[in-house]
Image (cartoon, rainbow, N blue to C red; front, side, top):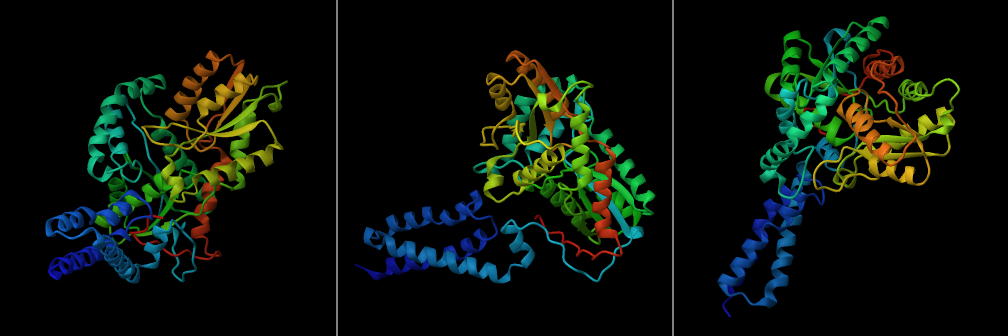
Length: 440
């Protein structure tokens, strides 16, 4: 037995895995890319073992050397990784830290963040293409290779049906006009408080795109960008992706911009009050809310977000708990999820399944509360108020209602304004600007 082939295989198994361990550390633990880089050297090692005639007894030694290379590469990466990057990989949410830098109204632009929606049926295909092409939102095995093809397939299969659904609510999404009204309402509320700060909005997948937003801010000459999500409950897929895309655009267009994040408001009294008022608006004179089973319907997410530590479902639970306390409600309520797309495992139970089960168990009066939506659009006006209503009627419901989205409810606008002032208020602790590379 010649030692040369064994030495060559040992050296290659060890050295090749050092950079692979380094690259692996750039991805969330147990994610597809993380697993890919752990096993990437296996085909090469198998090929060399067969080609060089290495005996099977040497396999455990080869594996041990490969693991050692992975460990060294991983530790090398950890030594040079920044604390902010490490927090991102571990899915640690943003944390306010004291900072001596003060930001003023005159240098700040507040940006409301949302995914957007097609304004007309002509925009549906482009909106869906952008949506399904985003790897931060839609992931699947080998998605980094086949994302565009997957998006093309979904757009091809879904565009006609999507246009039909948008036609049912006026031929497009009302989210642009709704968000514009929220911008106006927030601007007025801030001015009423003595705040002369610019407020604009940015969408991920329809105009105004992040690039448009950053050009507007660049032209204004303001360097501080205060990010305020219109998703009350944080998810990497929604708020996280919106922040990422805006910062990515800033890197190319306006690298001088400094980003700040407004604090969460999913437990704010005004936000909870807005949802409670919308629920009570559905109860007519002589009726009682106790007659209705409450279904808190939130937008669903693929299960891999929960596995990665996404706080979204837990914040939904906190909001619902606040609503129930305000209503004095202890029973006959449930949380469900809607709008699942594609052959993935999504959060359950699905809203349509809950509706069917409740009706079959004798509950004939249902009130659906779109708890995670701040505007009425296709997920509320069509999916809940038309499609789920039709299903419920087919199953024998006696009374099916949906509470309106909070839109520009004064309590909600107050919650947004308080979040802005938490950063701008000179009497409060200033917040540290977030670097462009943060995606937490």
